[in-house]
Image (tube, rainbow, N blue to C red):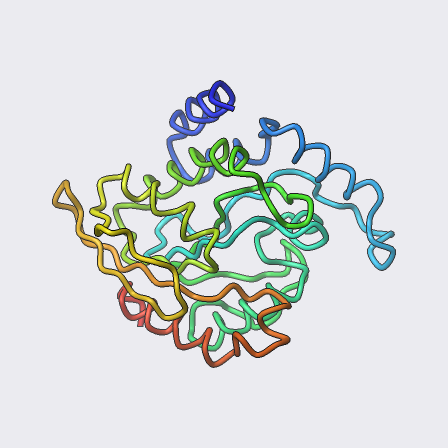
Length: 248
């Protein structure tokens, strides 16, 4: 999808601030498979949400423009963020993540239900490499690459104050490293492998402030139900990242 990726790149790079970028993300229709899926899910709905109006669009990042800490996931859940219009809101993964963020002092409340529920994040922003809900929660490499300019521009706009990133899962890790490399952060060779609790310090080629990169298992139901990721494990990574970002 090189031509589509180029079009996304032009639009993303033309955004001058986070608010403008978020609005542009929400209007994107560059990946036909994802557009068809997210809109079908929004029409058919899950029975328990039959009376609700689904968002059914790309989900922009969530959090303030002066974030010192970024959290990078995978993609919106079909009946979570694709329904509510806010990252990690409306599903079990988000319930776990926001409870942990509240515990370590980065979120104003431990529970979330919809995008107007009053939640505020403390200098923390949540985003993803893919902004549309994908079938089976699996974006294709082409969809990931087409969506990449949104993430690249978001991190560029955050860069003056950004000091740490937590990556939730291996997909996000692999998607993020090329973005950081292109943005003049020095990626070690060989490239660091994803793992829970991994921490990598990245220096900036342009002399800007360094960046602390953290790996964390994704708070998916599969991981949390099996105990592969416990609330304490998630809180420990978030607390370390919070301190690295200077937010304690």
